[in-house]
Each structure stands twice: as C-alpha cells, then as structure tokens.
Length: 361
Image (cartoon, rainbow, N blue to C red):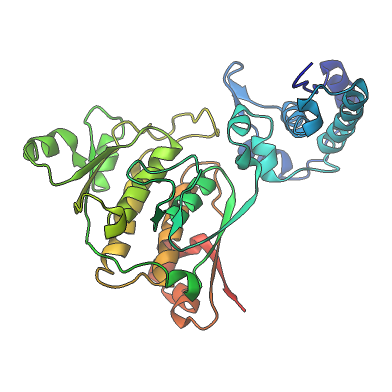
C-alpha cells in the first residue's frame, strides 16, 4: 500500500459541528469568506468553514513523509487522531495555520507547486543562474548568469502567494553590469481579445495594424505570452535581459510582446484561485520597468532602480485579487538614496509603497 491518504469522515465533521461553534467575532466570518473560502465549481459557491478546515487539515497531515512508503496501521491511526484533534482546534478557532496555508493547503495547485505553501522567501538582487528552476528563459542555458533571474524569482514567488525579501546592498548591486542598450518595447493585442479596449488605453497596439507595418521587418524579438503565471515572468525576464549584451545574443533592441491570449478581467483562475486582473496591470508594469532600465543606458543600475523594479512587480501582483505581495527591501546603511527613496511622494503613491524598506547593519 503506497501513498495512503488520511481523510476525515463526514460523520466526524458533522459531530464536531454539533458540539463546537466557531467564535468569529465582529468581522471574522466576513474576512474568511472574502479571503480564504475557495470557489467550488461543482457546487457553484464558495467553501463553507468546515469544508475549508477539512481541506487544510488533510492537506497538512498528508505531508507526513511516512505516508509515502507503505505506512503501518499505527502510523495511520496516529495521524488520523492528530487530524481529528487539529480539525476541532481550527474549526473552533482555537488555533489556525497561516493565511497562506488556509488558502492553498490541500488544493491541486499545492500538490503541483509545493512552494506555494511557503510564506517567505529571500533573494539577492545580483546576476544569478536560473539553474534547475522550473522557469528558465529559452534564450538562456541553466548555467548562464542573468540579471533577470532574481526579479523572475521574486515575480514567480509573489504570484504563488509568498512574501519576498530582497537584498539591494552595494555588494550585490555592484555585480550588475552596466546597461548596454535602450529597448524599444511594443505590446500588441488582437482585436478579438476581450481586453482589447482597456489594453489599448494602457498603451498597447493593435496587433493587425502592427503586423502590417512590420511585415517585412526582422529587427525585433517577438514573444507571445501564454495565459500562465510563467508567461508573465518570462516576458519581464526577456525585457530585462535584452538591455544587457551578455543575455541579448541577437543584439536586437526592439521587443514585441503579444498579450492577446491573456484571460480578461474577472475570469476565474482555476489553479491558484481567485479572479484574473486582465493584462492591463502587466502592460503598465512592463512599460514602467523598461523606463527605469532605459534611463540607465551606459551606467549601472542603482539600489533604488532595483527596488523600483521589484516594487513595480509587487504592484502588479497585488492586482491579482487574492494575492497580497509582501516585499522587504534590504539596502546598505550608507546608501542615502535608498534610505530616502520613500520621500518622493509621487513614486511612493505609484509603486514604492509595495515594500517595507530596511538596512543591513
């Protein structure tokens, strides 16, 4: 017997519901329904509290590694009893796992992306290898160092719901090479897309019109984003890496990103859950990131520039309904520009609110 799973009987759950009443308080139930009750397509409604607790408890208890290798009856009995005790505690609000765990534990998404259970991550903002990451840009090898890598890591983990701290201390930032090229970014969208009108207002270009005007041109890099989390990350990575000769093998300075396939605002996200933001926040982010890096052609990015890119990513992730996007920027204690960067009120209100900033001492 392999991969035995612990499940809680409905009769047990019904008995608990008869004997225990959750003490929600004034806003507890409303907050739960707004933030943690997942959509159940087969029932055309969101979860009830007992269904959420069942999913979460089973999701956690079945992480026990002993269940993967012919578990004994003693192990199964032990874990079943533990699951029952845990269900009573969480159902009655005497104990609770993290909000991240309430949202994702026990889902098919968690089983595919186990790191979505993690609350916190940390990355140094300096050129790094993608290595064995599940997201590796096609124009790079796993062993090639790229400026985009830490930004891709931050973007990916934020979209999975984890918070990300990032280091922009001088020792890291100084490892980023000077910006070689200014990139001409065009974002195109098909008229058939439900997001067409809103995207054009954000600066996107009609795809048919662009194709006609450039039908004989070959001086650009074209990437059509799939309707996936990875597609958003890879589009941003390509944009960043094209600014640097070592990761721009074709030496082209025009980038065309096709967002036609991205699902529209309000559409259900079946994996992570929640509803889609549409491509509009991504359009704004890509143009803003490009503006930050283009401003440094012939020079090196600063800690403020790197933090701005991370904050622009965080702002975009927040637009994705249930994602919260917690960031912490760690700079050098002697970097006055970094220390004072939130004093720029316009940029603070636009995107610099997206991280708590601290210094390394």
